Image (cartoon, rainbow, N blue to C red; front, side, top):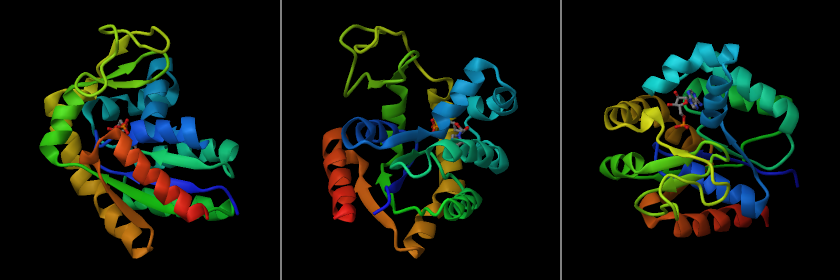
Length: 219
Ligand code: AMP
């Protein structure tokens, strides 16, 4: 059986990044986050970085052709490995583009998992989110604070708050999610591929559910 490709769907702050990281560490998936890739381009001041910065900082979506180009470059290197997609696709044209590119590589999306979370909980979680500048590990001041304030437990890197994790930008990102990304739920439902997990269950129980879904598919 070929390696599995999983798409994680859900509003910002639902725990997609955290779960994808666990799937990478414990289940051998490659964690692919378009958000991390874009933030890295901005940090390295590449031409893509200049092109996309205003979108990322304001919480609007990067145009589909730019996103698909970046994903294509990634797949040219990694297609065939088990991959968990975190934050991609975000629009119907991206999902269609993904299906097309995948079939070119002889691959398919095996499962989309929606991690759902209510709006108020999203805002509470995201304003408490911090990330390590060096190793990208994610903390939450409420659920999983670092041992020492502002410093990563793993690599001693500096923790920072993403510019787009400020309250007004979070509300804007949620609107973008509702308008542009939520239609993907029906898209994957129509293809018989959608599973749902309640984000309120918290990190460990969401992970157990994910592991069960992935395992069940692999048997
Ligand atoms: P994330 O880390 O997934 O929350 O993404 C942060 C920001 O990167 C988003 O608010 C968008 O500006 C941009 N971004 C990430 N993934 C995508 C995507 N698949 N399509 C368009 N924009 C994206």
